Image 1 (cartoon, rainbow, N blue to C red):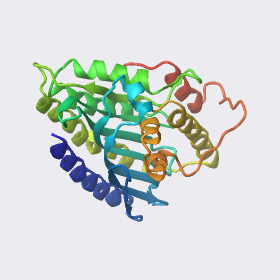
Image 2 (image 1 turned 90 degrees about the horizontal axis):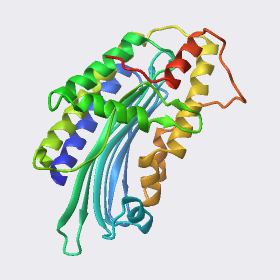
Image 3 (image 1 turned 60 degrees about the vertical axis):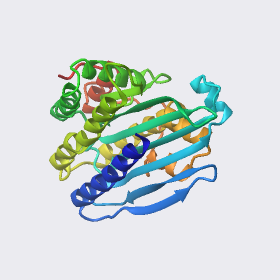
Amino acid sequence: MKDQFFQYIQDLQKKIIAQLEAVDGKAKFIKDEWHREEGGGGLSCVLTDGAVFEKAGVNISKVYGELPETMQKALNVSSGKFFACGLSLVIHPTSPHIPTTHANWRYFEMYDQDGNVVDQWFGGGQDLTPYYLDENDVIHWHSVCKKSCDAHNDSFYPKYKQECDKYFWNTHREEARGVGGLFFDYLKPTEEMPVEKWYDFVTEVGNSFLEAYLPIVEKHKYDEYTAAQKEWQEIRRGRYVEFNLIHDRGTLFGLKTNGRIESILMSLPKHVQWHYNHQPETDSPEAKLLDVLMHPKEWI
């Protein structure tokens, strides 16, 4: 399974990069292969200063070896041998009318001292972070998420949508990072859902990402915007940074397993602002967005 899934994310990385370059029409991804001393490595691919995308990263990694003690405690395990691979992407468009998006799909194995698999699971998801609320965009996004879930189990979408709303919550701000999507973790094999079926589900979600996101980009890529709207985007990006550095499990896992810093922090936007006690005007489009972020809703 680990070889099968790693091949999948390699292929998906190439597909997503090609599609993003075609939409941008200007910039190309730089490819940066790296190696981890303790075992494994990855390929980080980053685009900057494009016609549409200010910064985008599509990274894959495969790491293995002895699990650091800090992560043994976090996972509540005594065995220290592990394997993990995954694809992680973050896209920060230039226009404030195009949402930022994040997605990742990953697989994890734990071993006993003889190298036998003693635990395995999938995780991942995809979420959307708009700066101006276009409800039709959000409905489209969630419709694609629901379709990919319903192909496997009609209970998956409401469950993993709720998990997404719960996970991407800036507790110190009492607001969501965005308008959600899907989030799932510790998808372990059972009699009803063997590991092969979880693979089929997770890859279905991965394959749906471009269908969910690119139509939104194409819809807004030529929208005009003001300096004030750009400033609002950069203020909201500050909340994105706060979540990633304070709460995000993937970031913390990478840091605690001696991951590659440049790849881990790829998710941070190039331009961001923090204003003291910034408040949008009442009944403004900015205030409308905040209301949705503070009160997550059902979109479909």
